[in-house]
Amino acid sequence: VDLQSWFGDLDDNGGSTKTHELLEGNPAIDAGDGNSIPATDILGNPRVDDTSTANSGTGPTTYTDIGAYEWTDTDGDGF
Image 1 (cartoon, one colour):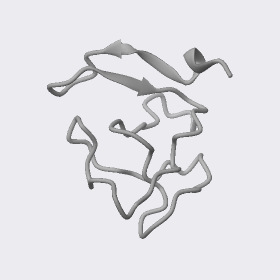
Image 2: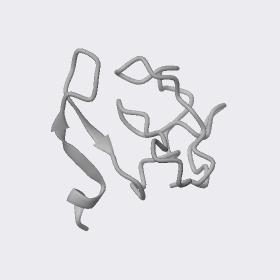
Image 3: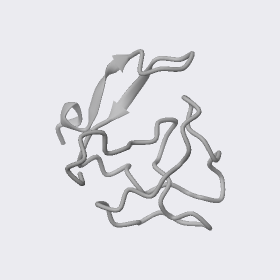
């Protein structure tokens, strides 16, 4: 598994803590446990449903991403 293709570099993506940005195609997208994850990510961004990714998580919100960072489609290509 090539993890470098799934995570960005440890960087200042906003907020008070450096994070590894989830990159397109990362299996952590929409695969979190909605029972135990905060409503916002470490940067204060809301947990959102990325419609281009099948929801495979559990709990009341099956679309949260695994980890502290919530991926969003910033380039508008649906991925």
